[in-house]
Image 1: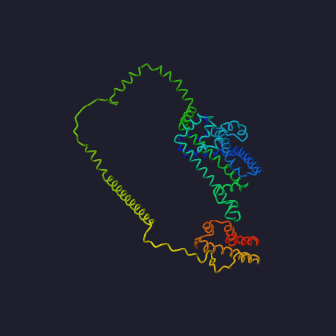
Image 2: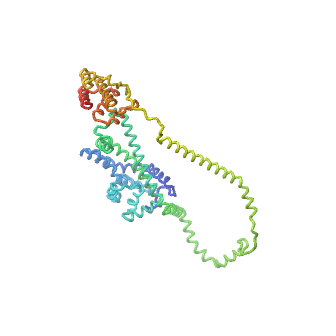
Image 3: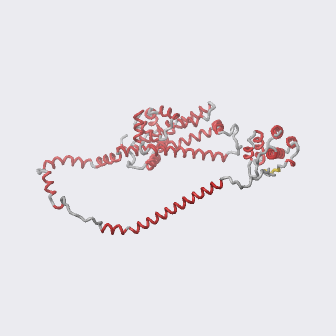
Length: 471
């Protein structure tokens, strides 16, 4: 890389301004950058998605797309670095130079990506790809460049990851709004984190793989450009690229004048027959240049009156500042005392009180979700009555009777403390989430809220399971 051929204005920038320069560079050369990026990214990701689909492991496609990010970064940096230094390459030239950007430590980058994640990856990439550093030399070089700057590269990665996640969640949310209503629980999800993650991977679709690939395709060049600009700015600060470029341009602009001066200097030197040191000494004897003389004299130990007067002139401002400081100190102490008093009051409220009245005994609610739970309002055999209603085609009434009977059993016989403020989810949680009750609640919610009435056979099966669950 020759700084004299650079196509951007080199000057000392703050790290955030340098990253903004990277976005500007990408806006200027976005066509060759994205063209080469697409020539590598699209065929490779299409092959990955098709291979995972053929193997029945479509969930693996987004993981491989993420793992291959160092490969996409290298083709983007290859095109962008040459454009910055005055050589805009096309797709054919970029693909023809594949040995340059594939042989720049890609294998080790892919290997270590699984074991260790470089949080300043885009900032460190030019060290491997453009400088060709390896091993200990690369670590020393990255340590030198990263002094006072690596944290900005890390924050660039963190912001980029959050932006990527935000886009993915936005697209997922938009897709969820367009899909029909589904059950609250994914089939096969046991409620645990690992179970939910496993089920999410199992349900990965073509849309998920393609959307993730599209987000990586759009954001990866921005991430690489910002890290490359941060790298260029750091080298400018360390190696004085801006000074070198300015001197080269001055030399190119005034080459004729500098050549004439260089040729004329010897003639002027030979034309002088005076002695330079003697002439300088004569000139310095003039009174305009002054002189030095050491003088000793006695001075009284008295304070300078002028300084005292100058000090008294600012006494008003000092008094005002002192008063404001004292007022702020008083307010601070008042606020601290108020916080301490509030903390003590709150702690006193939490302490047990001996004279406090015992809590009232639990009284089962007379009705829950608009249903009467009194045992006397239910038939003697709830399961038989519900099965009879199902055979008559009165499926909604049969489900309502089963649900009402289950709530009454929980409240009056099993001691489950249900309140009028609880929801169906609270009922499942407080009752231990039994399988029968979860199935019954899902069927009732689908019937009551979504108007999806289950078949008569399902209702009769629920009536039979009711007898076994509450025997």
